[in-house]
Image 1 (tube, helix red, strand yellow):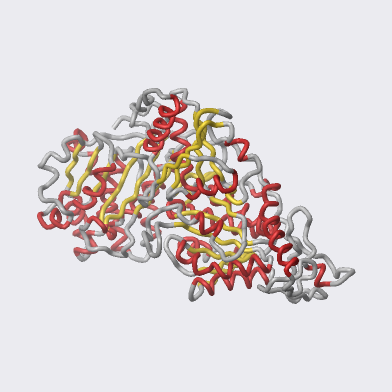
Image 2 (image 1 turned 90 degrees about the horizontal axis):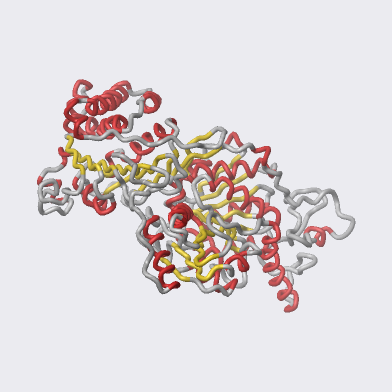
Length: 634
């Protein structure tokens, strides 16, 4: 399929879909590796069910992996896939409403039996009832051809069937003109100790690729191409959000010259961070998998009390359990990083679907007046930068810090320019050098006048024994105090400490668009990619629209109020029911127009474009702006 209709930066969007056991996620990651080495920019979106293994062939058991690749800049996994590979009828039924008109649809016809169609909820076969008339339908007996290919290896039928993801991947590699070397090497490494499985998968990969070269199929299946991206000079690697976050935490520990201790309890979608950090023992990272959420955060607080950088992680339900201990860290004035990988809720909710619904929880969700800084990552690679920034804030101000990511960021991938760590300044750690001349207890709570951070003194430090705890303390000595005026002063101090963060963070910038205008599209977190591309599209219509994306959410950058005041309307797209909008009204008195989405799926570029166009038309009293070509999917 040609991408010439994409009048901006051409890209191609591909979606693989099948049962949870079909190896769709593996197929997607291997395809991404090949496209990255071929020089394309890319962004991915793994989308999988909450059930570990839902009933095969059902719609609620469909696992999918979407990739957007091209010349770039690519910042989302794309709106409407132009290529769909569906391993069964359920995958087709779930994916069909999402794909572009005229898309190439490759279906595994082996699974289109009467039973398979019935389990997917089809009364008639969509291949023959006109449902697929608007698409380029390619019917391939993927399962049967795979079984024939690997028959000679003597695998059980169920094991042989598992090779079909590599058979299909071989075909897709041919469609995009990509080599097999990277995938071959992965298979050889992965199955180095199982000769039969290794050779069977290699055979399936080559068979699928050869199938694409046959004259009969070549006439029906277009060979696609994705343009190479023009990257800045440097060394790149593909990185998922969880990987970048883990690397950022390890780098922050190096910059601070402190050990990092990560204490967590497994929960979706936060668990990949635990898995990543468990591999970093040689980097001085300690990992503790606790018996529950409360134990995890209390252990992290203990690590910070002992002089290490304490980090804990969870998703919304687990963060709720940690809340009381967060207050302890605030009152004890200890550095602590709390990472919230948000998911759909409330309660168990949608464990594998993304959402931004924990912003209230991060900013306000504690008993008493207990403020703390909140920072949010906007892309998988940005997780690295945000991890360092969050640790820097925690140690400079001696306070817990919330770092917000979400399920989309944790699992999505993109190219990452590996940074030069010499470009990062060291992280100061508020040490107290030597024995103080006066009272030790007073010296330990003598706070910096700019940051309000107290010295970080580890227990057992000679001549610096001191009292610390969760009871209210005297503002000067740190001794327990129940005095009314002292509590007023300490409450004010805790608020001033968080407010002082604004003095050390950069002014809010405009991502794209003019410095003033009709509409400012304001976002935070993982909505960045869709909002950025939407505003770029609108710029082609000379629309006076700008994109502002907020990293530091509490406190806001000092200039944010003035910046927003330059625009007639403030549109806030969020994957919640309007939490950033509430915060902007609370802190800055700004009126916002909300665009809320809580479907468990990221924003599409086009739906943001359409909403903003409506706002522009409403403000001007004119007809809506002309629709932008749907083919632009960067």
